[in-house]
Structures are given as structure tokens and as C-alpha cells.
Amino acid sequence: MVKTLTRAAQSAIAWSLLGISAASASVEIVYTEPTSKQEQQAKQAIIDSEVNLLLVELSEQYFPFKTPLTVSYGGEDGPLYDPANHTMMMPYHFYSEALDYFTKNDYQEKYDRAPELGAIDTILHTLLHEAGHAYIEDQSIPVLGKEEDAVDNFAVVMMLEYVEDGDNAAISAADMFAFESQDRPDYYAVDEYIDEHSFDLQRYFSTLCLIYGSDPEKHSNLLDEIGKESLADRKDFCISHYQTINSNWHTYLKNHSKTYF
Ligand SMILES: [Zn+2]
Image (cartoon, rainbow, N blue to C red; front, side, top):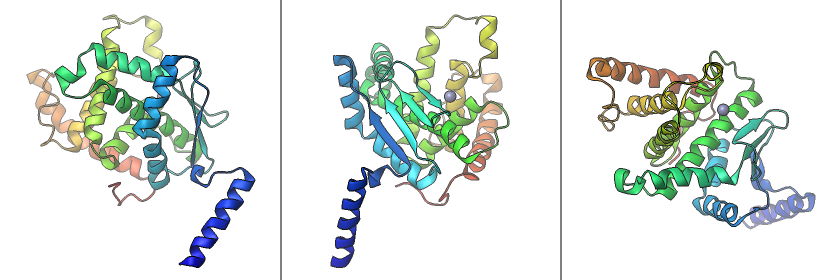
């Protein structure tokens, strides 16, 4: 035992001499200097939430990268994944904007979840969405259909299968799409129909569909805003759809039989 500890201590020293952190094997988190008080607050909220530790742990357990992924917080661009340098860009203002949406929509009063938590739920979903793009690139996973939809599915499957309270976090992420969609016109410009993303309201319903399908009893009322004529059909579809999506993503994941908690 002592020998092991000594060896561990020695290797920790060796790592630090090389300037490499042993903890950053698969995902490395980088914080650029905040440029305003609001950015500083966002950075602190993100650190305090431990959402990055969760991302790193999930990656190590289920989607380890061949080439380490860098997650870079700060700046103006993003959220996005840049395959050119295998880096995810996550601006601090994305957290602040999400917090604004959850606050102005009275999330605590109407949905019984703190706006701060809703914003972190959205960050987690987005980190996993972008990590999904990175994983597809890293593992050369074939994409048949819209990659944006595929990585939305990846994010929700990871949350539902391996994150404690992940279903409620995924519901918050879905609600964020609904909030964003309230600011949008009823009809989109022609160019927007060819965008690689589905529309926010589609992403909202797709997320709810997966959540419902993962546990129809627990979430029996989740799809109730859908008209009665199609509700039964949609419920059946969502159950089989979740099974398909969950099992297909697991073809490409490590340790699929283990659960996170
Ligand atoms: Zn994307």
C-alpha cells in the first residue's frame, strides 16, 4: 500500500514536471480571463456547479476521446465545436443569457426549479451536444441524417441514462428551446429552412419525446400539450424512438452496461 502511494506521488511529480495534469486525460477545461463582472459571475457559477467535473467523468466513463478535447470558456464565439483544433468554445455570456430566460419566465414559480439550476442544466446539455460533435469527429462515427439532431439525442441520452436527476435537467434544456422560440417569428425566412439545425420548437419537442420515451410512467403528462388526435400515436412513437436512439448511440459508447451512479 505504501509502495503504491509512493509510486503515485512520484508519478504526480513527474506529471507536474512535464507540465501535464493527469486529470486532463480526455477533456481539458480552460477558462479565459473574464472581461466583465457578469462574465466573472458566470464563470464562478459554472465552477461552483461542478458541471465540468460531470462532463469529464462522463467522458472518461462513456465517451473517451482518442485526442483530448479542449473546452475553452470565454470569448464571443459559440457555443460551438471547432473540428480544426478539436476545441469546444463556450462563451460565458451563454450562461448569463440562459439565466435571463429562466428568470424572466418565472421558472421557480411556474416550474419549481431555480433559474440558476435551469441555466446550468442548459450548460450541461450544450456541453454534451458539442461533445457529441467532437466524439463523432474523434471516433469517425458515420452520420446518417442531421448531425445536429444526432448530437441533441446524444446529450439527452447521456443525461437520462447516467446523470442523477438528468430527466429534470433535460426538461429544463427543452424549456430553454421553447423560451428561445418565443422570440422567433411564426414563419421563418426561406434561408432558415436549410439551416443545419432543427427549429427551436422542434428541438423542444424532440427532447420531450426522448424523455417521455425513456420512462412513460414517470413522465405520463409530459406530452399533454400535443393535440388529442395525435397524442396516442406520438406516445407510441416516442417509446420506440427512445429505444432505437439509446441503443444505437450505445453502439459507440464505452462501458454501456454500467450506470453512472
Ligand atoms: Zn451543434
